[in-house]
Image 1: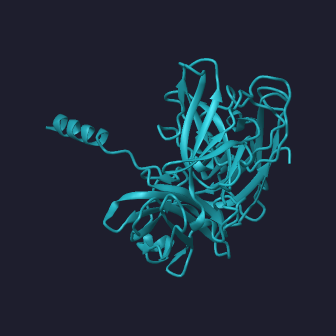
Image 2 (image 1 turned 90 degrees about the vertical axis):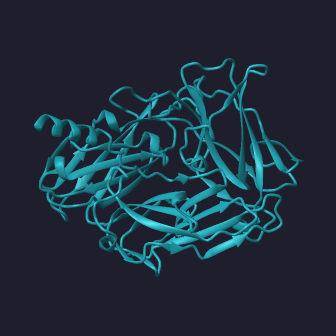
Image 3 (image 1 turned 45 degrees about the horizontal axis):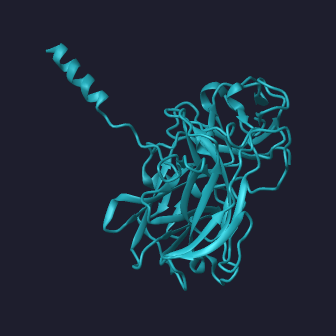
Length: 419
């Protein structure tokens, strides 16, 4: 009987579904141009200070002729972006199933859509705790089918957090990598056991695939905790993001070879891209760390009057890769590595190709190689890695003392290499 019970419990345990890990993205192909900003600032990271005047602005479109009643719910998450064990009323003041009120129909566009916007926190939903948050948007008729998910963080400024980045790394010197070091000043907030109570998260250019979390400090004393010479904090240096703009139907913008109307909408053919991994020169150009901005030079309201173009990407490459796939990456792809962003090889013309439906605006992008069953994609094959490259690093310090039930964020720092 004891053996039977143990067997039943064992199989019940292994059949439990894995806890969902939240990630910014869309739930279907009709949801487009998902943007997450702080106070609608283009260059912001999705991080706000608790009890401040900072607000998370969320925008997205649904390609449709009809307006939908869309609601959202707010979920508090731990440092791994899984749902916390605390209840709604502990982290939220107000309601947790809220209707999106700011809805704008598209005007004078070939592709019809509705633009949805909301801001958090707001009068209906106040945020009471620091930590990670996920917001799920859903249609009233299908509450269990999220159409979009947005992740952002709320921090308490309880500790002085600083960081540095160098190309003198533990694996090479002024070549292909950058190494981050993090310093925690604990004069204002005493930490009893750093190795078990703290986690440091570092993300490069808002890419979730290369985000790393470090728990064990290199050294610490009563006033300072240091994370340095940690191989996990070494990142590929990458290259300047490529860019293009599709802000007008009347003329091709930066990076665009030609613009033509083919039913049902405008088509933008980008110039053929070349492999930038070969060569000894690095050409600096001020990019936006992978971001995109919706903009129509002929519009008064960019959100509702910007049209959707079919954008044709072409990458010159002599053969079809067999050890991985090439993906288009940037904020506009939401770090998706699937059929929506993977490039297809055209053997007749020796190029990789992809066509994406994108809203008018300015775009940063890059080509990444990702191998099967490997989380982290690489810039090395197509973009190359140059130690002089400008990268944006977001550092967050999580804190969970013994007995606590959720991960607080008590410090945030943004670091730009080679600024």
